[in-house]
Length: 203
Image 1 (tube, helix red, strand yellow):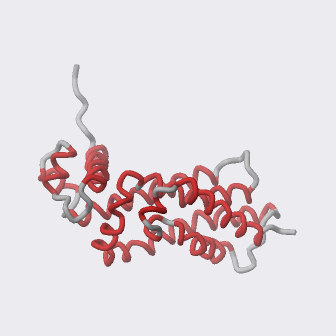
Image 2: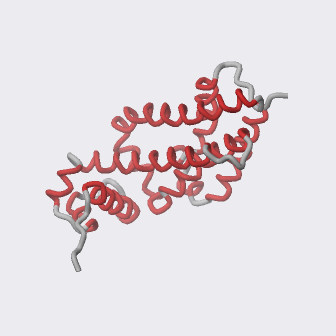
Image 3: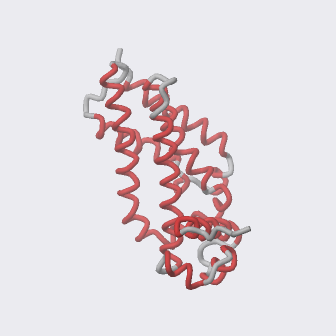
């Protein structure tokens, strides 16, 4: 039986999966490119075909978390079985819980990861925020059209405000202990989302 070789995308994901496991095991500072190669079952040269160095591998693991978040937000936004305000509320909670679930295996090393990557991460963070804002703006505009929501400052400004209001619950803003209490964070996110939506509901 012929074995299908990894595609470039598969190999990249295999490497990033290995990085996530190693972050949980060693943390960012102690993780080496040799460790990543061994854990991924590829040669160091293969890693360098996809990533220029350890910092970029780790940053791309964060990119992938954001891609998961955006995919989940779009999935909820497309649900036709929920009214628009219900979708927005679920999306606000999902932007928190999807991130927490994605970093669950290495939440104990997040502080050192962000400390080491802070300058490069900050250059990327604006792009993450804008991409999420636009997904939210689309659904808020839908709510304005169907008469269930009111965004007097405009959908994009309102979307950005809602994200800022929930940023305190994102993993990089929480302590290691708090990150271990997923259900409590989800409940807090639901309360904040409900308060935000109450202010937007058209009366």
